[in-house]
Length: 399
Ligand SMILES: [Zn+2]
Image (cartoon, rainbow, N blue to C red; front, side, top):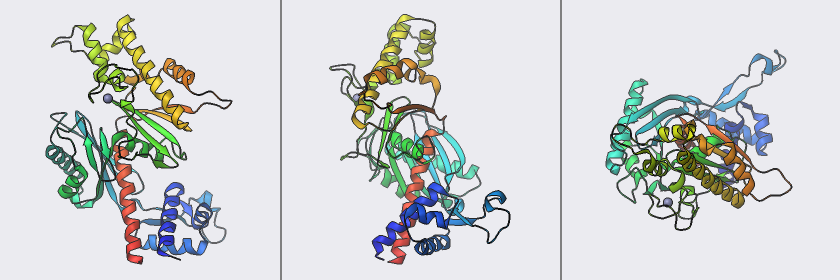
């Protein structure tokens, strides 16, 4: 058996334990196609390193004391602790997660300003993490890894941020800055990609290998998973769904170009239009809530702003489906306030614009996760990274 085969075997078995655990060794052999003898050898290595543990199934599954008790394997939660951090304009949201993917604690850390220098952001992340760890009675050195999700154009393989609405500078090696400051492995990725990782690992996309996740927050994000892997494009900036063009010479986007989807559906775009009709002043600023309320009260202009946003959004989603033909499209949002983009009219418009064949259209589902969606995605990705490092360490020692 070559080192490469051994490495691939470890990876397959680890992934199978993560996907199916608690799981007996004999089933791991069936899931991976690896011989029972090799499964026994590799799982013994993982047990010795504390990455996995044995567990007895409950009475029923064990079949009430006949013969030798069946022993299952699962990831050992205490093996590693990771943190996920999502950077948004008003705060950092944080989550601590164990090696099994259980969220142990969540927290938020307010930000004074929405746009800041890279140094300032690293300071804020460090402070927020130590506050959360202290609150949980843990020390910083208990952390094995960190995942940070940020809006913008990110080369995740390097943790390099080409551009982000949260940073006052472009071309920032944020991953390296975080690793230097915190002394732990750190990954940085586009926030929507991380939500796709979380949907794949814990959410509605479990068991799917071809799906897209469209995130709806202040902007519109997209994560594409093809053949089980995130699609990133050749410059690390694939899947900038918010900046696909839906109107020739259209509205001005904050990226500087015209006619982008975001320039019609993002909250800043809606508020820009709402300000024209709402005569906002200091006491009555134009807010998304006021716009939605006006539409609800049958204000025709408010309704037309939201209807147009919904139609533009439907056109973008339909284009996406026509390109990728995924099994599943997840519209992931933190809050229900964006339900003008989830409405039946929007769904109908999507269905009317996709390629029609004699098969059911891809499933479009709405997933409103609540506030922990983003931090969970960041933590899930940190977990993947820490697992990669642990498995690579086994290879290095075995070589
Ligand atoms: Zn744009």
